[in-house]
Image (cartoon, rainbow, N blue to C red):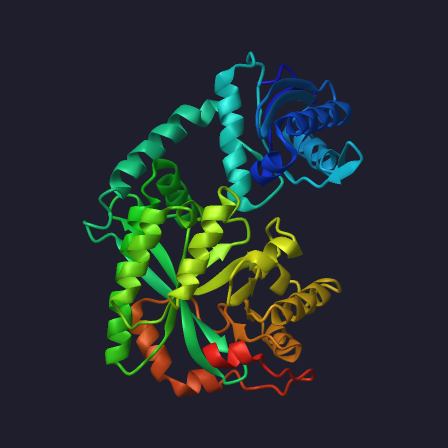
Length: 422
C-alpha cells in the first residue's frame, strides 16, 4: 500500500492497438514499429513520470505515477485521445484505436507478474468495450484466482449436472405488436454457490477454451426448446449470443451449421461490434457462411463498441441492436434521442432492422415507435423468462396488445430485403 494518503505511487499498464494486425501487414513491419514507438512517445509526454517498457507487435508496456486509482484512471482516460490521434508516417496519416489495462503497483517492484495483471485488465477493457480498465488489487489476487479455478472446475460439469438454464427475453415487433423473436440468455445456478454472474463464468469459459463446448449446449438447448414452441403453435426466431472467439473457429462454425441444417427452427446469432477484431478475415468469412445457411446475424450493443461506419458495412448483418445506455437516456437526455434516431436511420440505410434494448419506460417505448424502431426489447415488455413462461406469454394476446400501436410520425417503407426476410 502507499505510505500515506495522496502520496504518488507507481502504476503498471499495457496499451493495445485495436485491429492492428491488418494495418501492420499493409504498411510493413518497419513502418508499424515506427508507429508503435510514436505512440510510446505520446504516452510518456502525457503521463507523470511516464516510462516505456517493452514495445511488442501490438502492445506497449509502461509505467507512470499517480496518487491513487481515481487519479490514474483520470490520467489514462485523458491520455487516450492524444495518444490515438492520427499518426503521420511518410506523409500518410493512420487512425488508431487503443485500449489500456492497468494495475496499482502498491509499492512493489515492477515485474512480469504486475504486467500480467495489467494484461488481464486489458482483457476486461475489451470485454466491457471501454478504453481503460484496472485489475483488482494485488492483495486479492491469490483468493480471486483460487475462486476462479474452483468455479471453472465446476463449470466444466455444469451442463451434465443440469445446472445450466436458458431464459428467453422476447422482442416485440413494433408495427405488428406481436412477438416474433427472442434472445436466449444463459444462466448458471450452482447448488452451493448460487446463481453465478453470467459475465464471470462466460469470461472464465473464454479464458479456459471451453466457450465452444458451452455454446454447443446453448445451441442444442435452443433448438430443442424451439421444437417445444412449435408443438405449442408458436414460431419464434431464437437468437444466441456468440463469443468473438468462436467467429474465427472453423470447427465450431461447422458444428453450428450442421446443427441448424438438421432443424427447421429459425436461429440467429448475436455478435458484438468488436467480435471480429482478433481475426477479421476468418470471422467475416464465417459470418457470410452462417448467413448463406439462413442464420440471421444481429449486431449487439451497437454504440458501445469501437467500430467505424466502414467496419460496420462489412458485417453481413440483418439486425442492429442499439445499446441500452442510449435507450435509457431517451427520456432525460437531449443528445441520446438524436443518436438513437441517427442509428435507426443508419441501420435502415444499410438494410438492417433495428432492435432497441433496455426498453423499461413507456415514454421511451413511444419515442422509439415514432422514430421507426422495428423491434423493442426490455423489462417493460418482458423480463427474461423460462420456456414455460415464454409459451404462456406468447399465448397471451392481451399482453401484446397492451402496448398499443402508435402511428409513426415518420413512416418508413421497409426495404425489399427486409420484406422478404422478415
